[in-house]
Image (cartoon, rainbow, N blue to C red; front, side):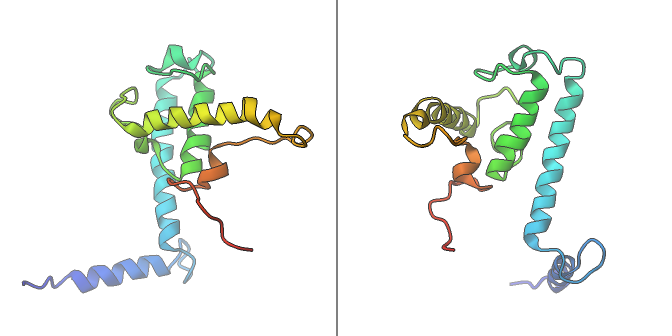
Length: 162
């Protein structure tokens, strides 16, 4: 097997990058932080491009501005914020997780339909089921993506003990 002479250099560079923060302070940046920054940048790129493409149509209904909007009949700008702040952040993903970023209307990725089904479930829980639980009427009880996902693609099946 042929050795790669630059492999130790790459490994050292990676650890150096991870161990120094943005201001050159040791120990302030972790791999998780770097991944989060990358995710934020990717999300910002797509949201920015889409926002630019709908300029002047922000207050029009989303289903008249975008293709394949089936149930969110909200203004286009609000739909974009719901996707960015709601779905994307709640699952810790960017747009490309559910959408083909070369054709956002495409239904090719199964995650898009799963999200629609999960949204229908959340609407049923919030609209019907929570109302039937005595004692919750006095509290603003709702369920949303974050309730289960907590920033992860897979829902949390257990929580750490306090």
